[in-house]
Length: 364
Ligand code: PEP
Ligand code: MN
Image (tube, rainbow, N blue to C red; front, side, top):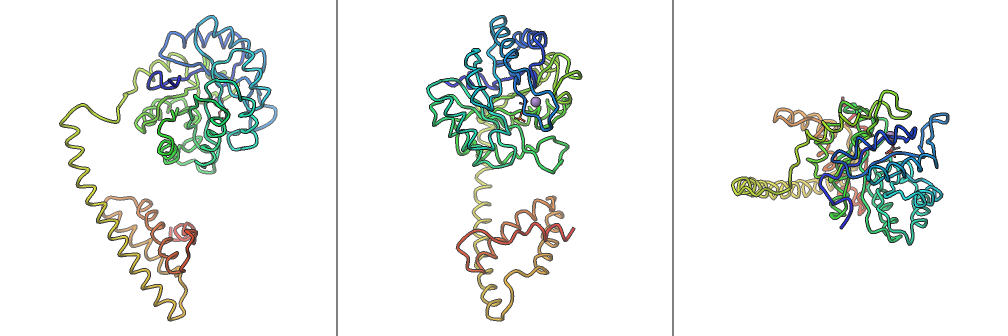
């Protein structure tokens, strides 16, 4: 059985970076007495700017080895180079992870996969920094193809210009959800530390991750977070970690309560017929689009008509708001519908069409 499935939620905790022997041993001592399955610590750190602390390398591997021997807690590190893999294996590291900045690079992931051939060690693959589910899945597949049988994914959020929700990295939930749909057996561990970038929001995001059916959590934990050499704002103390873990509500996909199950099935039946109506209505709308397209063609009119699209965005958005929906949501649904309409009217066989985003923004 997968190591990551030994308990749900599977908990990984430990400092962002292994800073000193004392820091590693103090953290391990605290975590060993808790409900934590795996200790993490970065020994080579991918830093955005040169001149920041880049990890202690081999001495840090020795501290982790000592921590594992003394406290019996399995240990994991990030590997980004083939030499990291070799050194980690030489020092008895139990689990390896591939960082977000490495997952983006298929050449590098392949080099790591090649270095792992013939070795059976559990590996965790963080999502790439950009929100690309194929790239994430591709990296996982490269590792699996190398013969690694125990692979997990880590959802650490996606970087970008947006600071929506005040997150350091956007959670972009549809991406881990899609990965789970494609690979139902794959364990997905959420890293609320790198998503929120804020120690005060770890608890709230951890609960959300579990409610999104993710299978575990990786929480950066440091004996003295304020003095951490990297990611100081997002690390919690072992005591705070204990409180966070104790406060989690573990929910299941199904319920044994007959009443609850029946209620759900009833509501879902109604929803199924509503969805059938929605799909039928969309099909009729597309048929109408086709007819409109023929009129435009016969009268030498453009397929895309910016004024009409602005009107649709405004009126449908407003109607949605009157019904208690957000304008953004309704408009995003109409963007899809409009793109498909345009595709039909252009007689395109490819799904690529005009990006309506600019128009939406222009109306605000
Ligand atoms: C880390 O885990 O400390 C780290 C560098 O993470 P990421 O690869 O998600 O940025
Ligand atoms: Mn970190």
